[in-house]
Amino acid sequence: MSELKKYTLNEFEKYINSINVSRSVRLIQLHHTYSPGYKQFTGENHIQLQTGMRNYHIKNNGWSDIGQHFTIFPDGVIVSGRSLEKIPAGIKGANTGAVCIECLGNFDKGGDIMADVQKNTIINAVKILLNRFQLKAQEAVIYHGWWSSSGAGLGDYSKTKSVKTCPGTNFFGGNTRTAFENNLLPLLEGKIKDAKKEEIEDIINRLSGAGIISDTALWIQKCTNDINVYWLCKKTADYIKRK
Image: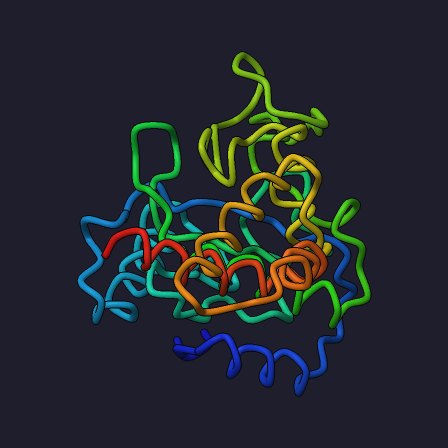
């Protein structure tokens, strides 16, 4: 079994771009752990929680190793799991050719509220993998809830047919294909759809009012065209609002 290692986002990018993977990769699975969740995370027990999941998967599920290749924690730290040379135990019917990412937390409605740093890491870690394996987000990124318990591809989440709600009914706005296409997909493509236009203008106006920026039109354009600029401005504006 592979050694469990912690990575910052920058370290993760360097690692992914430095390795050779002999198997073909065409899918990126997104999951939430459900349990453990935010209450079990102390900010220091990344390896302990990952080891616990590995032990559970081996002893209770009878798998050869932890199911996922990576887990993304609430503080944005990424912890390795199963070797990328091996297919994951993530989605029955969609494991071949897949990289499996678990996002630590319960992201069903009423559960954990995803931290901005975790959100940012999820977006950028997926983008790193898409770029590394030359994949398109629309075709490659999949949710566990789009498959049935028998491994049949449903194409979308179904309350009556899906194996589970994973990655959560509130994961980036929902676990349906429409929610993915309206919320996460634009972020992976580095775009902010028109639905976000008023929010972007509000963010930039707050920054302008605080004297942080002067050319509002320029910064609205920057936020619209670059997701990383958008998140930086949003985080700054939220901090101003709380003060």
